Length: 178
Image (cartoon, rainbow, N blue to C red; front, side, top):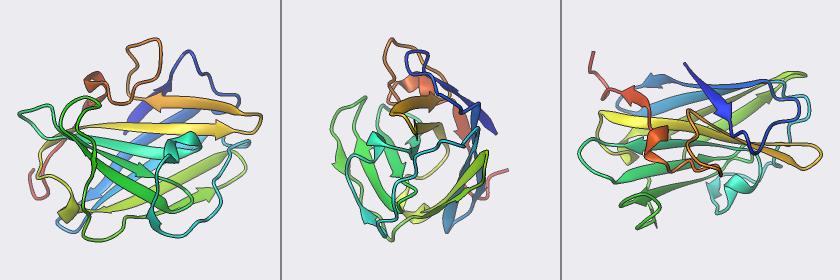
């Protein structure tokens, strides 16, 4: 489990913590979970049905960055509670962006209580680069009152930057690797 921190220039209103982790990884699916405590004022994008979409980061969304060893290239996975999603390839930090082909759509959903929210996602493993990887969990959390906080494993600059290689801290083995 990874504890994310909010960027100091964009503090949350009520959100106390965001945790993220991979809860399963096999030949078929990579399953990830984000848990938010203090979610009482969370802005949840309306259901929009499955499909690719741009600009998901403009409101509450969850992201996973994956970098295989031996280079600067990485994959960015954007997932929204609206069930919209997108996956991008980058050749280097914020360079060479293109939509990554996926064999099928990711599956995701949000469970929202009075103080806690759980966002679960299943990403088709065959659409991802071969492991092992270093990955970074992130979240954009919008709360009522137009407050948006940016959560990552670490922040190194004056502005939030989820593409910073320092954010790719979690090691993930290939499926079937002990």
